Image (tube, rainbow, N blue to C red; front, side):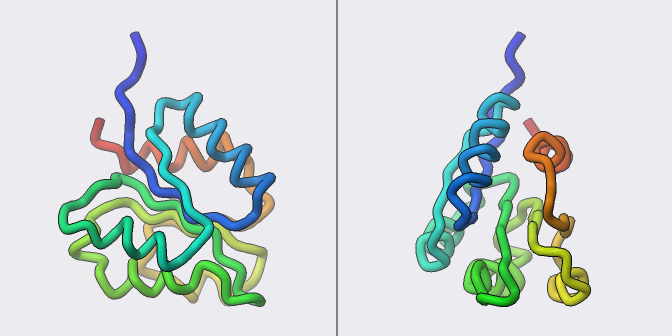
Length: 124
């Protein structure tokens, strides 16, 4: 029997890791929508009703990548109503950066581990 699909929004800029993560999420019965752009992520998240059960955001503190999506998620935490996993470089600032997130994972991280952690937030 195939497990039901769990909708996830992936906001990640790095092509190679994003591709590996999408493949792994697909294999683990997630329904993946992805973007590399913060504006597109905010549009996807502000659709009115919760569309995703999990949001995975890649953050690069040095380049400030992923910040727009993170700011939106932080400011609209009650409306978004989903699990939030932030992935970033090993940096002490990362853990203090988003204490409201459900999980903060440090790179390098295995895509299979990310899928396992994301499954925790699925109600399917």
